[in-house]
Length: 162
Image 1: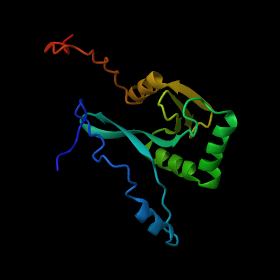
Image 2: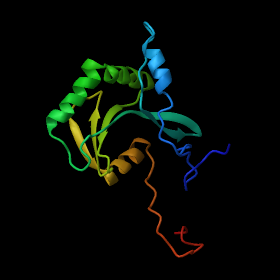
Image 3: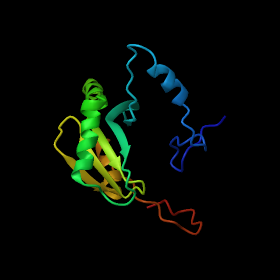
């Protein structure tokens, strides 16, 4: 089986189906005593001198409303869930401290127009980023310059040369 990559050579989604292939394992694991697990959503990485280096931990949550940012009480309930009810926020911060990286909750609209971020270490409120700002943030935490957007051409072989 060949690894699927995107136009930049980065690994992308390997399967076409949307089945949650971990559900049986998770259900089995939840029945075990004292085997605590945290389902960490993402660790963001970069390369430094050819070495893989973690740069951030992200706990992702999709906003139930598809097209508008909900009231502050919605975000308060996310923090309550992450730090009190489920404690996954606390555990994400413990791991982030060990990796010496920041940890964020990212609440996003299904249409990917807004990403609302909460720094779990600083706990200094939510910040709203539009899609472009969120992409910029990803490059910034890696200390790399954002590449210029590709311009669609009519087959010009020199289109990528600046």
